[in-house]
Amino acid sequence: DAKTTQPPSMDCAEGRAANLPCNHSTISGNEYVYWYRQIHSQGPQYIIHGLKNNETNEMASLIITEDRKSSTLILPHATLRDTAVYYCIVRVDYTGKLIFGQGTTLQVKP
Amino acid sequence: DGGITQSPKYLFRKEGQNVTLSCEQNLNHDAMYWYRQDPGQGLRLIYYSQIVNDFQKGDIAEGYSVSREKKESFPLTVTSAQKNPTAFYLCASSPLGLAGEEDTQYFGPGTRLTVL
Image 1 (cartoon, rainbow over the protein chains, first blue to last red):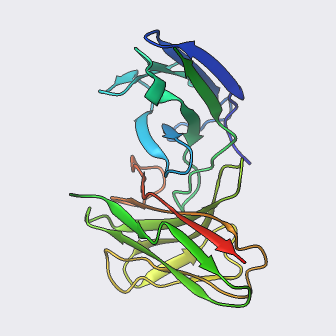
Image 2 (cartoon, chains in turn purple, yellow):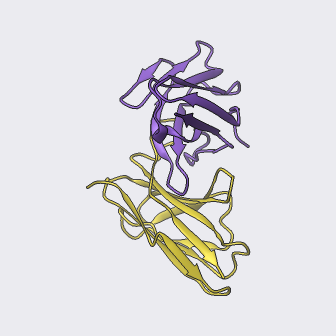
């Protein structure tokens, strides 16, 4: 079972910031939060990951709450090409398996 | 270019035939994974390998087989024993393959298998 909870869908206006929330209330102390996105019929694309601190890279920012029970992925200036399914994932067990939930379908509109 | 390649992109097979999906990586990653994705669903782990000549079953290994003779290659065979083989198959690799460590998985473009 997925250890994360995300809203099924969100809309965002082109050029605006897209803020995608994720709840992971049962996360363990050494588990990282990973974000991927998947455009239809393509392989998932890695976006960003973090443990405790906020992280930023060329694609996005990741804000993790102090209690680590939730996080927010921020796409600062969404474009139409950012339309995709976004997955928030917590790594689990010795296999390194990524448990994918249903994700959030982000629709960026002109 | 560095990355993960999967071939072919689309594959059709007749019911009862075995088929092998290719996955190659030139990232020098130790770990490789095979996932299956059904329409509207997330990914489910089929097999994984954390080192050459070793691999382990994932959650849905029945009807599948793999080999890891070379670090850069991890082919997946879908056998006739797999009852519902039509799906999107994704290969991934990661540098370390260690749980609890910071180890990012990178995915290939996928192979869409259709059983006729």
